[in-house]
Amino acid sequence: MHLIPIEIDSIRIGYPLPCDLVDRDGILLAKKSFVVRSKDDLVMFYNRSEGLFIDGMDAEALHKAYIDQLQTMMRKDKSIGEIAESKLLVDKAMKRKAEASDRVDWRDLQAQAHYVLRDPQPENFLERLEPVHQILYRESLRNPNGVLFALIQLSATETTMYSATHSMLVSVMCGLAAREVLNWPEPVDMLLRKAALTMNLSMTELQDRLAAQMRPADAFQQTRIDEHAQQSVALLQTMGVTDATWLEAVAAHHAQAPGPLRSKTPAQRLARLIQRADMFAARLSPRLTRPPMTPAMAMQACYFDEHKQVDEAGAALIKAVGIYQPGAYVRLASEEVAVVVRRGANTSTPRVAVVLNRSGMPTTEHAVRDTSQKEYRVLASVPHNDVKVQLKLDRLMPLTQPVSTDRSW
Image: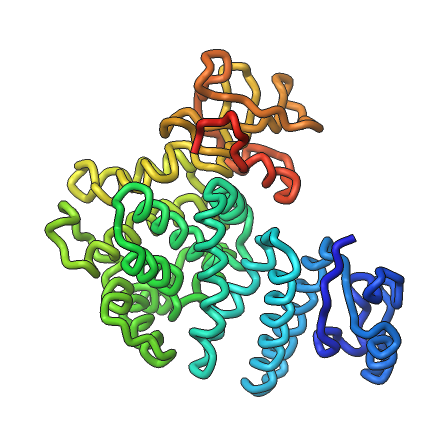
């Protein structure tokens, strides 16, 4: 059992516990569904055990309870101060969890980004944004396949926190292209990643709503979409962002500006790469009004510019993440369906893990295949919604790590 310390105020008084509470030795204090009647009871538990702890495997249940609590507070028109205090408790718990474990809980990070971007506060926005940015950057350096796998899987299945997941994926893709293909210097790469992460700041709540909306955007919503780039710049300035390149990149991230990157200003180069990655990620994600594209089709859409010519930024993204990205599904010559776990020696020969056998049945063991071998070559992409299996990120993530004899990225 991997124990994570939590704050007393993160437990909702009068509601069933979302998970077991234990002491520092893992001894049970209160079972899941136990209703804590008063804060005095929690203080008693805390003093008896010198802290409150949960099993790391229960973190997702606890954060769902956090989300429910925040939504209840907003419905009851609680003050911004009360809501912000609850958010800080969530952020603190996430930070302590990250410090306690070297392994990233991607659903935790998704929730943290959601809190930061959906309700930014001038007094602590940059402070709260930085841990999200740093974890994405660190993991992109340490295991880029794993970052792509987690975010593409979440992007193709998650709608309630769509905007945050979308921005994280765009930020990671842009960073990989900047470092691995375009060889941009680290300060430029950093501004690029932060601009991508905050490009939709003024319409985070609207993006989440549109992802779950049964009808297309109405006239009012479309106006907000059309104006969101400039509105995001204004909001970022309110949040304390002063870097002109960061702000200009956000302002121009929807501009249709084809042409060589060298012909553009530094901020315009960042904006063009963000625009291409944004296009890819938007096509990948589900909507109630349309099914998502396959990752291969989404990537092809960003490869060609507005004049049907090869786009330099789009080509850099494909070279960085591959035609078949980690997290995407493919059909193999062996008649198996597999999920991509690692980029290959070239953009079209990834390493994959089988999820459906030749009979179309889910596999209990995910055999790894090398698609550079003829018998396992990729025949086609498979849409996420055509693969009726529930993948467990924790189980698949170890396969994204290259082994010592593996020459793939």
